[in-house]
Image (cartoon, rainbow, N blue to C red; front, top):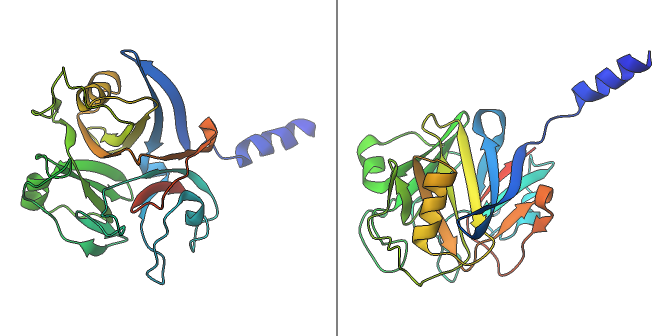
Length: 238
């Protein structure tokens, strides 16, 4: 009967929700987490039911309906008071409209984009295409700049750039079934980060989330980055 008990245990223990690893590409190190979107609970988190900022990874586990946090990352830009810079939808409710125009900072370096999550897919849309197509998104967060646009790097990225920071972002597969999140373990330029998504991860579209404040929660890598309170976060929960 022992083999029956072992078989039951193997069947009962769920597979890892998120696959995370550290990889090196072109002399730079990155932490990469891959999510099988149709089979995992990929969501955005910003404020709790009382309208208060959630602000950090551990607080996500205290939200209703969350028993376990498997992965999280900051997911969109915010002002010093943690108010949203760009478009944001959570569980079908829009908290901030789309910002289509150019502006200061990385967010306004067009083209920027929108990360759109549904139960069975995750896709990245260039912002003006998002406005034209009006896709239905359960959750959505706008950020910028785009890193990869239909297989091409953002046109303003310069190979010789000396502007380097810890950076994080997301790429999505062509069919929307896979979302790949990455954060650099050392300072990189936009050009280097974009190449990583396009050439190493082979993502046809990728979106920059942020730099300087980039953080990751990945138990598989022993990481739970802390610091000042965050704005919107993306997470896989049980």
